[in-house]
Every structure is written in structure tokens, then in C-alpha cells.
Amino acid sequence: MTTPPFTLGAHHIGLTVPDLDQTKAFFEGALGFQQVGEVPDYPAVFISDGTVMLTLWRAENPETATPFDRRKNIGLHHLALKVADFAALDAVYERVSTWPGVETECAPCPVRPESPARHFLCIIPGGLRFEFFAPPE
Image 1 (cartoon, rainbow, N blue to C red):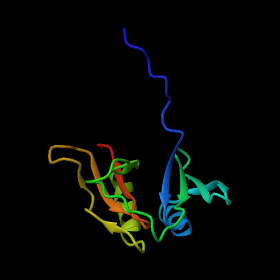
Image 2 (tube, helix red, strand yellow):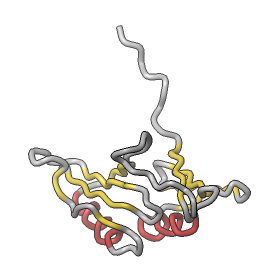
Image 3 (cartoon, one colour):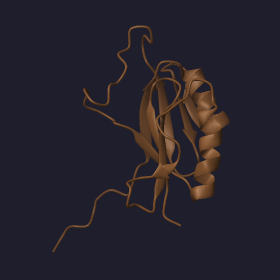
Image 4 (cartoon, rainbow, N blue to C red):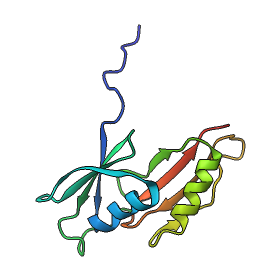
């Protein structure tokens, strides 16, 4: 008999960023997230799409902060956000790929050659790697 999981999914995901205002503007402007809280003295803001909450923390000294290298560092490789369908994925790609400071790694494509699911990856302002995922239709 297996033990059922003790956890119930993610409550929030905390991300350290060099420019809090720039990253918050990306999530609000490009993706429609809304600010749901903040701690000005930390400084941090809490943003949400209604399903997942992200905590954006400003690095103590952005000029000397070490950027994450997904191939060399231990830590969050990327964060994947799910969209409703292929049309939504295409719409997000059009919006995100033209956002200032975004570097896209690929346009929407199958996750693997044999996969009916589609995705795209990008680096958002501040250097964080994100994937946007659409389940098979």
C-alpha cells in the first residue's frame, strides 16, 4: 500500500530577479498577472494568474548577482506555465516574443517529435527561463 502525497501542489514559487519593476511589468503586461501583495522593505511583490502565485524578490545587489546557468548550477532549470490550448500558446508567443528584453529559444513546436503537446521556451527580462506549455488538443 502506498502512502498518499502529503502535499497539495504549489502554493507559490519564489524567484530572485535583478529588476523587480521590470519583471513585474512583464508578468502584468505580457501575461495578465495581477499583484496580490508586496513586502516593500524586502523588497518583494507577489503576483498571480489566479492559479499560481509567484513571489518576485529583488536581488540584494543586482550589479554583482550571479546569473543562473542552467547547465552548470543547481537550482530551478525553468518554470513551465500551462495554457489552455494551441491557440492560446500562439497568442502568448506573439505577445511574449515581442516583449522588450525577451529572448525566445524556439517558436511553438511539439515538445518532442512524437508528442502531440506543444510548447515554447524563452528567457524573460531578468534572465529567468520560462516554458509555456499547451496540452494535446
